Amino acid sequence: MVRSNSSNVGAGRATAIDMTAAGVRQGVRRLLPVSVFVIPFGLAFGAAAVEQGLTPAQSVIMSALVFAGAAQFAALDLWQAPIPYLSLALVILAVNARHIILGAALSTWVNALSRARRSLALMFLSDANFVDSHSAFKSGTTDVGILLGGGLTLWTTWVVGTAIGAMAGSSIGSLERFGIDVVMAAFFAAVLAGEMKTRTSIVVVAVAGMVAIATLGLLPSGWNIIAAAVCGGTVGAMRHAE
Image (tube, rainbow, N blue to C red; front, side, top):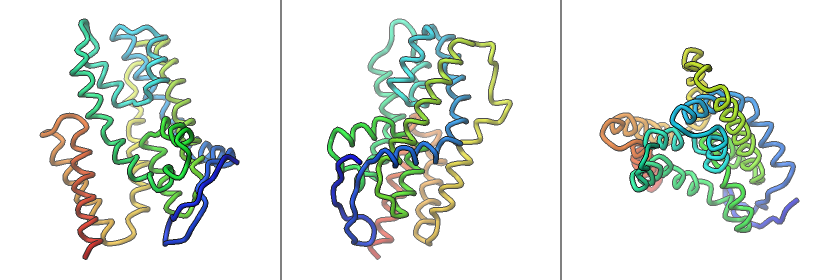
């Protein structure tokens, strides 16, 4: 077991926050079924990247180092000579800005670790393992290895999918005909439904959902999620203060 620290988690009781190999294995097991459905998205990105002019090796390296599907697809739209670096940076910032919210939500647990271990876990942070690990933390789990293990599983399948897609190219065809793009949305919806146990949580989710939908066509890509998070969080804080 790696070094642990003491922190206040939950209803005012002191618990040990740590990151263990057992926690990593648990994170892998928890998200292994979901990670299988990441492969088709990797296939689509790999094929699209090669079609846009990247080599298979470049496509795989991008997925391995960036590990941000939405941002990578957005980057492909701007991938042309000469590359508009400023526009590219702004688009990626907008798409990935939600990670600021995700990191803040996990701060109670990850900040109890050393900077090196904290950085290692957050390197593999994604929407799916955030939802899974945050739910586990709120239930009393204090092993941040769950976050790292789930992230490593998703990262592996994303890179593998990209490699296959880059080598297969356009012969894969459209994957949407299989309905795979619905799987992740169904996963998030199922987890979210489990979190809606109080009137406040239902109101927060409703407000955030309405803001996200209402601003989808009004704000640049990704910023509607930030607006939804800010509005939902504000409503939650106001109701908590009552």
